[in-house]
Image 1 (cartoon, helix red, strand yellow):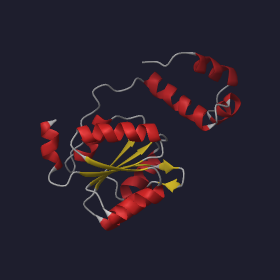
Image 2 (cartoon, rainbow, N blue to C red):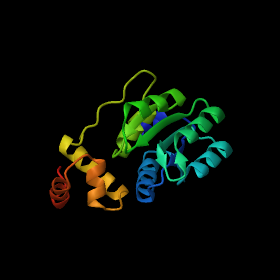
Image 3 (cartoon, one colour):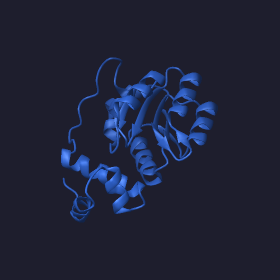
Image 4 (spheres, helix red, strand yellow):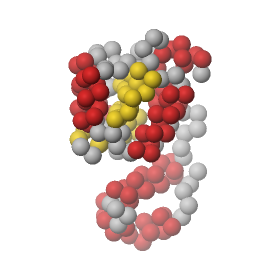
Length: 183
């Protein structure tokens, strides 16, 4: 922890942009414990306003927000503060969006679910140095289950629509949803 505080330097300002309010609150609290001075925004508009008024040294932006794309916030941050270290988060990890995020100026790109330790490692990684791999990575079964749950919620808990979007048989999906989450 003390080592992380030294890595932060003088400016410890951090902007968190995510429309998932419970996640945003948990992450803000965890990042404050790691020595960051956190400011939060729940939308692209709020994120851009903060980035314009008080450009932070660090930022974590969700890719998909209710009012637009988190990359719009990344562009404003790059314009206002070129040295800002930015991590883009998304629940929809894809190579194309990762490339777009890095081209626009993101320092790193992480798929949700992720934790404060992984985010801190990504924010504080030096130049070409890769952040260390996660200590407790999720199993493949857990990642699959998390993805299914997210799509299920986005489909307003409609099993038929979720099965269609996941290209899965409805009964198979019902069996998966009836089980407990894997570890």
